Amino acid sequence: MIVVLLGPPGVGKGTQGVLLCEARGFTHLSTGDLLRKARREGTPLGREAQGYMDRGELVPDSVIIGMVREALAELGDGGVVFDGFPRTVAQAEALDDVLDELGRSVGRVVVLHADDEVLVKRLSGRRSCPDCGAVYNVHFNAPATEGRCDRCEGTLTQRRDDHPETVRTRLDVYRAQTEPLVAFYEDHPAPVATVEADRPVDEVQAGLLAALDG
Ligand code: AP5
Image (cartoon, protein in one colour):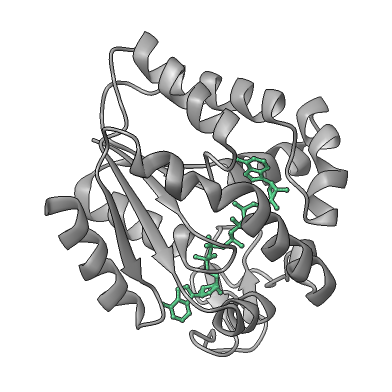
């Protein structure tokens, strides 16, 4: 099955996407993670994306669609969870075209919802381990030792785009450019479900699994 996780910054797409992949044996495809990896490696793609990401703006569709096309070509025909993609109607149309070429289609769309004050608190508290990728939150899921990864003892960092002024831009960009995708998918053959995400992580995951199986 191909699952699209939609929702604003900080709603828990990454957290839930990883758990869903563990539960169902799917592959997690996060365009944000792919871009951050390209930045760390200093590739031309990473350098092109850097300014957009630091400002909280979307990276141009042509760049993202090329990146996803490549990533999908490397996957077999197992399940995929898209996290942070598509983010514009043009990306959603391109995804349908690429999947059509592969004889596949989007199977489910799940919209995660939480109010802005919850999102801002989650983003301001997020800390990540650059070594193993583990994600924490100083408010909701703090590491045992402040600033240290429980898994590998790496030094935790804050994402550059989680600073308050950039968070505001990211939320505005979500409302203007990504939220219209909910209407796009309501007119699409794939069933759309909304899951309330202002709940503990395991309850959100249970809601997500129920939405996929419903
Ligand atoms: P991306 O990395 O996709 O960021 P995002 O969509 O803004 O989402 P986040 O990763 O911030 O949040 P999330 O929903 O995954 O939440 P998480 O699970 O981490 O994109 C970054 C940038 O890359 C974009 O701004 C853009 O520039 C570019 N980009 C990426 N894709 C693009 C595309 N397709 N087109 C164009 N540009 C693109 O959780 C957040 C925090 O909350 C964590 O600390 C977590 O521990 C905590 N948390 C999660 N769930 C719960 C819970 N239930 N209760 C309490 N805390 C929780």
